[in-house]
Image: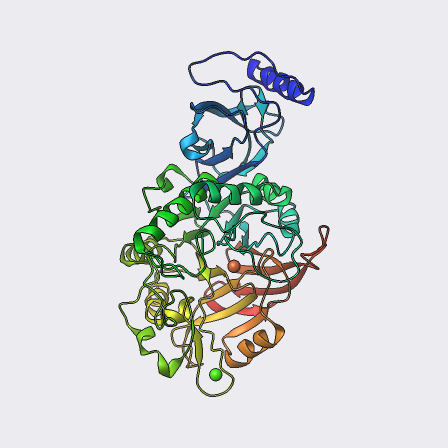
Amino acid sequence: MSVTRRGFLRGAAALAAGLVLPLSARGLAQPRFTASPFTLGVASGYPHASGMTLWTRLVDPGLPGAPVEVHWELAEDEAFRTIAARGTATASSALAHSVHVDVTGLAPARPYWYRFRAGEALSPVGRTRTAPGREDAPPRMRFAVAACQQYEQGYFTAFRHMAREDLDLVVHLGDYVYESSWGRNHVRAHGAEEPYTLDDYRGRYALYKNDADLQAAHAAFPWLVTWDDHEVDNDYANDRSQDLDPREIFLARRAAAYQAYYEHMPLPAWARPRGADLRLYGSASYGGLAAFFVLDTRQYRSHQACARPNRGGGNVVREEDCAARRDPALTMLGSAQESWLNESVRRSGARWNVVAQQTLMAQADRREGPGADYWTDGWDGYPRARERLLASLANPGVSNPLVVSGDVHMAAVTDLRRDFDDPRSPVVATEFVCPSIASQGPTLKRVELILQENPHIKFANGARRGYTTIELTANRCVSRMRTIASEKEPDSPIRTLSTYSVESGRPGAQRG
Ligand code: FE
Ligand code: CA
């Protein structure tokens, strides 16, 4: 047994006994903890063939203002007998004592276990996994897609079930926290007002991340993450808030929210916030089998067209009353991200190309009968930008494009067509919209109307909470909508609500 291993065990025993041991001074502050500072759990993210990012955050009233030394180690086995990498990171109050470690030098396509130590306190153990190498052709990969977890509206039971699945990766598409309290039949409370300051947002993340089910899903798999609006403010677009706050004031709020997001996510160093900006879009690849393109549709988008008077945010508009919606200058991604995506998918070479982004991409007419109403906060508010994105995916050099989406609190399967109004228009990609983890969904009547008006939407269910799993092999993609019986009960069982598949080379989903 190594010295470090004994030290870890001593620390664990001391904590269990409630003792505070004398601590060695080593330059940086050596804090004394009366309880574990690792109550927000551990996480890993952005796996690649030789590493990933490890995350934790220390929380304790006794944390000093000075930076704290945090030791980390990553092993080939759960008992930490064979250490593959170890090191020391610095947790500073400037980043809420969060720790982000970009580990490199690991072997491809294998599991690893990791943990942290601060003073004599030991973190829980997390399991993670490297991606296959660029030249590898893994026989299969499985990932889960999740979004929308309004804490007050439901328990995170779905995450407990997700942690027990056999997955390589979790992709989270945003609304990880909610800034506002809303909805029916709350099972628990935020216990705080809407956040505006950095401290407010840190408190909101700490509340959500205290949830044991959410922690279990983080500790079980590496995650790719992106945000939607509620990590900052409902329906915000770039520098415009729903309430039309003065721009500088809203950007200061956005900077606080973005920083808190970074502090609580397993994001690599390249995502460190810079003022009011945070580069969140990025890609990850799984050998020749799959590539993921994670988008940010909030930070760079144009303001929503045809907003209500004296309001920002989205609006339901009649097609004939909102020509501005079709302005080609409107963008969802901003020009830099749009070029990056075009270039990245073109060069991918992967069998399956998964675009991971926030909201329903398929057109969704909401008016019964002739004519159409559209919701302008989603892709329906930016139809030219959607055409550009689909044109880029329709490039014959892009093999098997898939789009995974969240936001609408409704599991759905759609055929993404070049022209949604023409049923003979070719299907470019298949879209899987995940159910929400906890946020309440649309009424049955609304879901039925959407299905009736939009034949390219093949399946929709807004009644159940859960997540979607997707299994990729060379020839097939199988998507399962996994839903819990009730988010209002803490121990609800999970089942597969519906299964859809896509054959390689034949875009469009088939039932079963
Ligand atoms: Fe949501
Ligand atoms: Ca209609």
